[in-house]
Length: 256
Length: 309
Image (cartoon, rainbow over all chains, first blue to last red; front, side, top):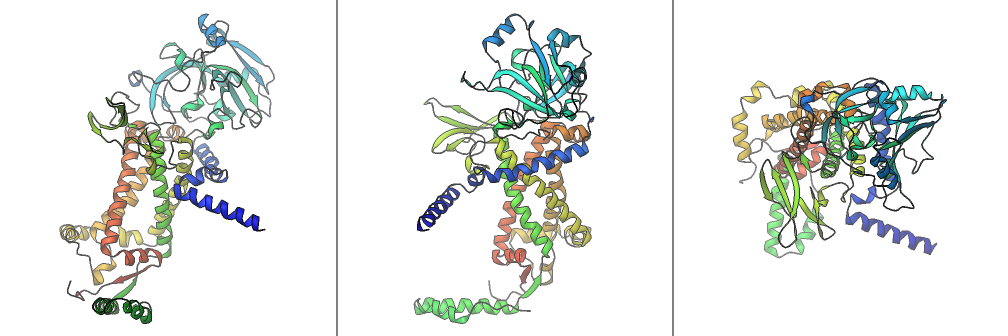
């Protein structure tokens, strides 16, 4: 008992010390407090979805509004042998697979993607850091790709697996990944983009194919997309939070 | 109704420890205060909903402000327009190395650059000078941690908005808005006199102390009913999902980056209001003012001065 009490007192003193050091640092570093804060994410998502139905469009701009300089963020070049080889042969052999909970798994080359009906949109890219750039994107609507694959009834999310490793440790490369639910995935402005400002996507912006989902913040717009998987839940994928940045504390709902 | 203070026994015992002269002065001061209090009127100034909503709002504003600075630090620059023109920020908190290799904090407003080392652009983090927009002591959490700052900001944003809506409903329903907050044309006629009174730190007594003067009305009205909605709407304009619902907000504020800049100006207007608010509380009698926002009771001096000050 005495030991317990001493232990408790020591912990209380340590806790008070930590609080005294920085009153606001304390709660953020517990496991329970951020969970309380994160409970607002679900509310924000529900309410934003209530206002924004499945089809409200992100504002589109004119050519005159396009940013003269569009900042590339995150990975600027995946730099792996596989990717460098793909760049060298102009992504001729790049295949985007669509699998998981679908009736007809697909393999699409960039040429096949370009042959599909396309959508061109001039939209604003909002980075979670706070800056915005406006660019023109052309790509195949994700909805029509999913329609070809035929999602099973229990499919709820599309997971996007990318070619860029986020870790420099070759034994644990932690490739970038992201996910959307089917509402956002089937939104008319959600496209697998291959052109930016009328040119094929450059390497810093995600060549050969990146995701555009215009009602969400920038980290959702996965670059260097290689594989799409339809899943019922992303609990079993990597950190279980539905994306690389989500596994690092960012909210899955990136509508604000 | 009058007030009485703590037991006289305490008073004499504390006076006993002092010299006769000092003790006498202490007792005389206490007597003067007693005499003044005997003439004071206790006025029930703030209703329970106003008091509760006030303190919830105070906590929200503190957390929203500090977590907002944390979010700002992720990209410590402001722009005007639809997109970020990185070469022409309106405001930029940046840093550079001087000839000795020391980190210098720079604040750039338009094209003017100021050395703000230690405060803005570069400040000490765990004893080391580091590149930071706002210093660690002003942000929530302290270390650079955008994801956590966003969690704080968007959790307390809900409480701030719900609290603000409750206040608006209550203020209209109870006529607090119309009776106490809305500046009327008759109030505006006293504007000049009120400004002079404020500068001379002459605070109202008697009946006049039961109502807000025109400067108070203008301050509270504009903070609650203009600045509050403006900070929420500019915040929502930064949300790509909300822009798909209310694209006219972008038109109203001149684009997302302008909305972000206005949001920032709103935050610092809240800070400015807060500083003036605290200064006025201190000057007008901090204990009486704070008590009135906790218990609702506010002591009012009679019209005629009670002592020769």
